Image 1 (cartoon, rainbow, N blue to C red):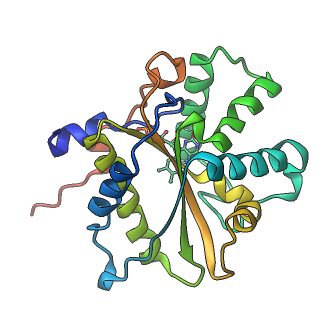
Image 2 (image 1 turned 90 degrees about the horizontal axis):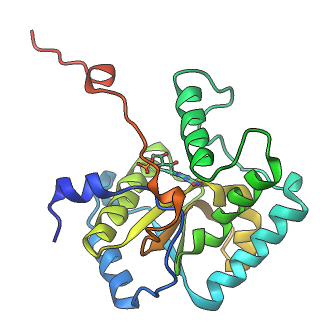
Image 3 (image 1 turned 90 degrees about the vertical axis):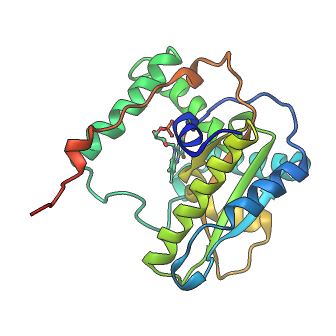
Length: 224
Ligand SMILES: Cc1cc2nc3c(=O)[nH]c(=O)nc-3n(C[C@H](O)[C@H](O)[C@H](O)COP(=O)(O)O)c2cc1C
């Protein structure tokens, strides 16, 4: 089993998977471990919809239909990052996009190829398991923070099973379709999706190495 540092350092967002199924007992194990995440006043604000087989395919087909035919009708119901992008966030966002498209051989302005790659989000990048995470609509900032801890636990517990993940905000853009296909009650808001499966090591997009800011850029030590 990987130690904690190894699990953290070997986690990457994987955007192409082998079709090999993940046993249900393994998925359950990951969720059993992940539910030990801390949450303010132990509220545990997460709700998980695990999709495999026909259920995954149905959701994928419905969202892809919306993506290709009526994308202008679908928007997120919240601000995910910034209303108006600015640096340093904008440069970081652009870099990962360019690096990814570079690996795929997609050039600037190749709109159709860019769209086709983006659409892979809605097939969970070929993963045999797709997870949709929901949260009660009226929950506040701390609950969203709790949720992040839970999601990272899943990513790390997956590494312990030799599995990889990709968290996906993209599902939020088609929340109405997801709500309909999964029959979600009105109080459940689509938070994010996540792909889960075995990495396709031959896929160029999986060789992406993302960078991080050095410690001195984001950490201040106040000692005296
Ligand atoms: C909340 C969240 C949402 C994300 N949404 C997407 C997404 O919709 N599609 C995608 O390809 N990657 C998505 N990512 C992956 C990020 O692009 C990735 O974490 C970041 O570039 C750092 O790369 P790494 O995860 O490989 O270390 C998301 C990550 C997080 C944490």
